[in-house]
Image 1: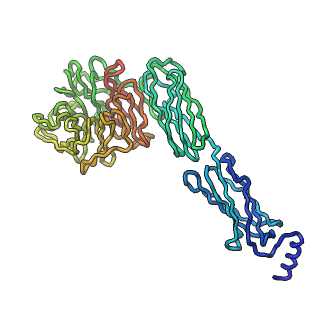
Image 2: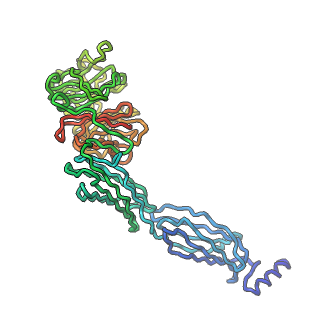
Image 3: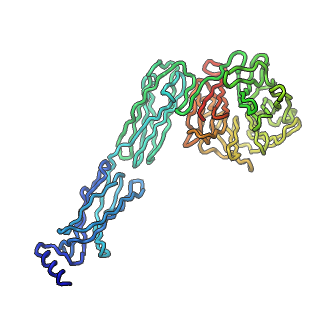
Length: 514
């Protein structure tokens, strides 16, 4: 030891503090050791000693190992400094916001292996954050319509329970959903507005959430206005309206519709109407005015089920139960579809019970056959064609069919409440992971850039909803007073066909914003 150090050591020894000795221990305490997540801080105090004598001006480093209740590691920045003239070091540790445990280590950095530790416990005192998302564009809803209310809840540890309550014109409907351990979730609660709901701001929605620590949070209430004039409501970002209302002259029992790429008109498979439909036909409807062409596009002999076009719109295809797949060609001189013919041998049962159909550029016509519970493929369209089975009989009551952006094939299964995805090469069908639908009928893939993009639109035939399968579970794209049976999308607008229901004949609605 140098003379200067010996003099220094002697000076500090008078005060009971050593300056030049090597530390052999670090004493650590936390205040508090039981941390509230609302504050998220604790103070670490350390004393650097050599043989119980405090050491001044010693370099120290504080590190924290911190894990929350879910096993997630949270980083806390290390702290470095030096002991004061009394051998003490003090620092505030922040960011202790998650329910969990941790260890604080204070090391004498120039002496390997010399360190002290202290443990802490963080108790969650932060309530969950909960928000009711606006269920309709303008917080208005019609009587007799369904209503899906989404509630978003966030918590640093996880939510254990969410409760939604609707009061007023909706009788005290209370639903509880458990989402244990979920730190950020959007939950959907299904309600129905009674047909007798009083007009005006008569529905109040409230929501509560509890986290895993028992903390509770409440959402800001939302008030909905009941408007008897509303027959279709849409969530924010979309806008719905009525295109055509059925009369005794048309939309008597509609089953399918499609938009022609050739003339932009709607083509509807209708049934049971008087002349010119004569029991079954395809009708043309103006998508802007709702006007119906008085001349039937084609008349059928059974039940008209589906309508489809190829990419150019030059060819119109339809299904007519039983056993018929029909075909018409665009006539540039008359600006109509004519020259009717068939795409299969109608003298045999193949397909037996054709419902909806779609045109694939490579595979040809794909038709769901209810009787054989399969997808039938008509590679060529001629009166002697014999469609082949693309899938095995894995369906129960197949109804709708659609093609995704990568050529994948989707089929709706009415009785099984399921959407299937079919491998176009092998025909193997697997459950579509985001289906979870009830009585699906018509389906169509929607692209675009909206919140509903890159999903299937599904007409729930007995649920008064059109839903999109994007995300976790279906999200409502339209609430209807009537039962939707098919949906078709063109230029960012979806057209929804409803079957006779709620005292109305068939109707056509538009939903813009896709």
